Image 1 (spheres, one colour):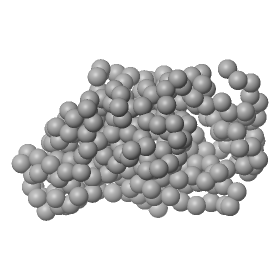
Image 2 (cartoon, helix red, strand yellow; image 1 turned 60 degrees about the vertical axis):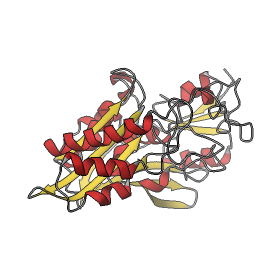
Image 3 (cartoon, helix red, strand yellow; image 1 turned 90 degrees about the vertical axis):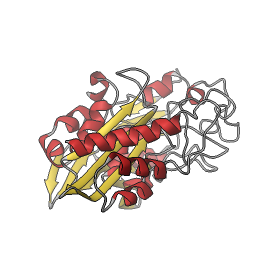
Image 4 (spheres, helix red, strand yellow; image 1 turned 180 degrees about the vertical axis):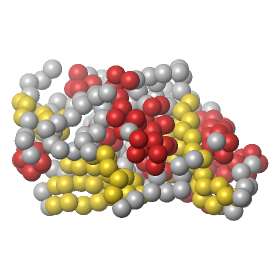
Amino acid sequence: MNQFSYVRPANQQAAIDAITRDSAARFIAGGTNLLDLMKNGVLAPERLVDINRLPLKNIALNNNILHIGALALNSEVAAHPLVKTHHPLLSQALLAGASQQLRNMATTGGNMMQRTRCSYFYDITMPCNKRTPGSGCSAIGGINRMHAIFGASDQCIAVHPSDMCVALTALDATVLVAGPKGNRSIPFGEFHRLPGNTPDKDNNLSKGELITGIEIPNSPFTKNIYYLKVRDRASYAFALVSVAAALDISNNTIRGARLAMGGVAHKPWRLHEAEKTLIGKTPTADNFRIAATVATQSARTYPHNAFKVPMAQNSIVTALQKAAAV
């Protein structure tokens, strides 16, 4: 492993200053992804800026908005009464992710910042535009079973691995950040990026910016919700396809719907058009199948992942059925 220095700032501004001054520095909190990247030689930061002293662990409800600090642990968020009451979809998604040990270390902000689990990204002997821009994408002509069916480019077909982020996309969360130019808010759906011509850029954070928390507005999606994760084994595996489904049902009519998918794109994938097809309809299998068909109209497959289209359709129908049945 390369040599690196380690600092532990006592306040937020000092942490931001430390990152801003050093182009090779990285924030570290739980380290559940960053340390893997360092051990595999994918990243070699010259300085780690430990932010665990910062007061960013709070979970509170104010003015019908749930605030979750960036350093709140995934296990704490999943079990918190406010989350389970107001946004149970988020709790379900978190419990579907990783293992209990990792959830006890992983933070909300770190979960958002994790990199793809594409095997070619982790293999430093293989070309990867995400790791080394301009070197090529080994996955396009390689084993691409786990890869994207939406929003990919000829530069990268990797997928975002987070379960938590799929739920936050469906719940219209907002990301709070602080940086050298002050504070700003980013709609969650605009936080992560599609690969385009710059697959090395996972998100829209600017240099020196620090995630301080997320906010989720209250919504009617507290009862008829379900998070479905389809994977190769029952635990500690990343999704082939996942679906966050939430319905607002009144008098057997769908008044509102939220759908998002994981394991299918470079960012959590919101299904806006499929949501629209459900509004005003009854919660039936036939209507769910129509929504699933609409959701996958833009899918583009590769030699090893064509199975993801019917899997995505079936998963959407199943998730909606389970949500409606609650």
